[in-house]
Length: 637
Ligand SMILES: Nc1ncnc2c1ncn2[C@@H]1O[C@H](COP(=O)(O)OP(=O)(O)OP(=O)(O)O)[C@@H](O)[C@H]1O
Image (cartoon, helix red, strand yellow):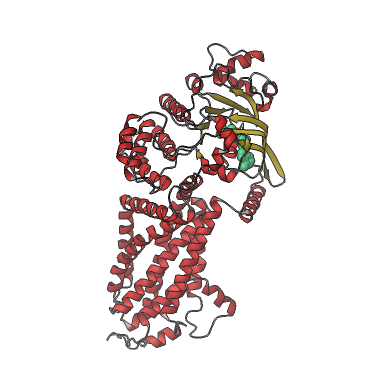
């Protein structure tokens, strides 16, 4: 069938839960037996889940309920594969032991915080996600139809052209769900999707989730205290108390279940509130009886009590269980690494250009700093009585190129990491294309802003106006700026904003000191250890490169003003020798800076990868870090 015909066909089914143009996925039933989870902090360990059992079926909307701290989010995290260490027991998909790697490809996890890419509209966000998830194998026209289907299903049509940061809480939540629906995942986990929404928005959200589930998906969400109306919408309710299952069955089965335990729910009371209150011990120690009555989740007696009839639109479950359809189904990334790189680059550049306030701020900052530095070192470039001050100008340029590009990264990247975490976990793209796009997208802006600064300072401080020298000076400044930006990424890829903003400037101080260590002692080399330490500072190569650019041979003597009797540093070779830089070569410094830029980017990529999926060494470091933190704070977290 041609795309055009499919478009016409699709418009007829708009609004139905069945998303006609999406890749069809076989349904997946999820069950777990004797699931336990223990966290260890130092010598102490805490059991959070205690041998619980349960089954969440395809086509049904499941709610995990329970008092605060009961273990709902933990259960969701483990089932989604977001948390693995410390969990034991059996998790099965369609009756077979779960293959976590495979399961991650077919499930999506919508976390409590609605982290959305800023500066793009709902429609753009959907199209970008479609390009990433569906690839170029599907035509643009068909992607537009798919996006339209989902936008209508989640009632986002009115907000289609609204920027994501201006959406209401409910719209943000619905957009988070819409983005994950794009490649039709068979299993969807949602952590408290109604938190922060009013009654009407919560009810809309839950009925939409029910429609999504009816399309043959397994939808599981954790909830706090749903209203009675909301509670009745759920096909399946799973109550957790103190890490155990206190009820598993339909929402309609809650009252009869409690009646059987001689715990009648008052007629005016919301059954959801009542079962949570009873299980949390507000009416006496009944939790153990409830857990025993449902055999900690093994009992299926209440499963179909007054249940809605669920119609599966896709494959029959018997077919799935018999044929291993789920395993054979292809869940690869929809797009190639190159396509992902291009889409992500487009998204990042769009966001950079749209963030006008920040762009103007950066322009203003570079202009301000440029003029301040230009005034401080005004016309000192050829003045033989001010050669030392001109060296100070080179140092000021290096410091400006260190701090200005690094600080915004330290502030913004930790938040970006949270966003990447969600998108990466939900398999939107690979980390290599992401990181490559990040580096490439940032480079033009960094070069542009460095040029603004240099266009002001270089001529006003009367540096030599010879093209090769101008090019060399500019190249070194840009290299230092790019390395500083990458250093910001390295630091903030593993840390929170507060820690990044502390560590970045703190680490810069030794780098700045090492850059000028030994200067003034002529060609006498510093002790080996200091020479080695100095060679670790990219600022050292930066300053050497700038000196080589403006004072490198052949350069005539500087001009000694008439009112000055004697200019010691009139001869630049003598000055360069005194600075201990007589042997420096621009190309050697530029080469080292290039290597350092590469190394810094590789380090940033490696650390980000470890942040998103840590290897054993990094997990061990995290455990040790937590242990030290616990010991230092003297409390148990
Ligand atoms: N890494 C951890 N270290 C120590 N305790 C933890 C850790 N993770 C979870 N817990 C504890 O496990 C219990 C269950 O946490 P969880 O977040 O699953 O509860 P919840 O039912 O989702 O609660 P809420 O409804 O308040 O979000 C809580 O008491 C929490 O303090």
